[in-house]
Amino acid sequence: MGSNSILNHRQMKVFENALAIYDKDTPDRWQNISKITGMTVEQVKRQYQLLVEDIEQIESGKVPLPKYKTSGTKSFYQL
Image (tube, rainbow, N blue to C red):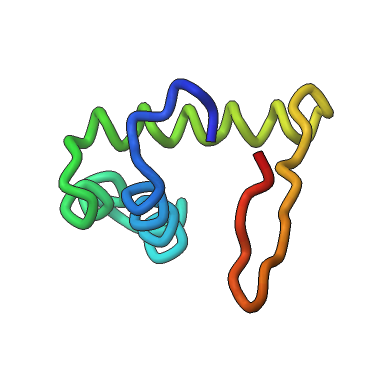
């Protein structure tokens, strides 16, 4: 996630899972995601915009994909 993210890793996973459950066609999408994440609707919308911007940066090649390293059965980010 980009440096503008307001969420830690666990919160980001909850946010991303909520986006998967409540897609763009879901009535009251932002309110539902707000309830799950504990964020305000405005925070949810802002975090979504940050995610969209990150994806656009990655897809345009401006930001490289993270390199993953596997150790046993667990995956770790390579720093």
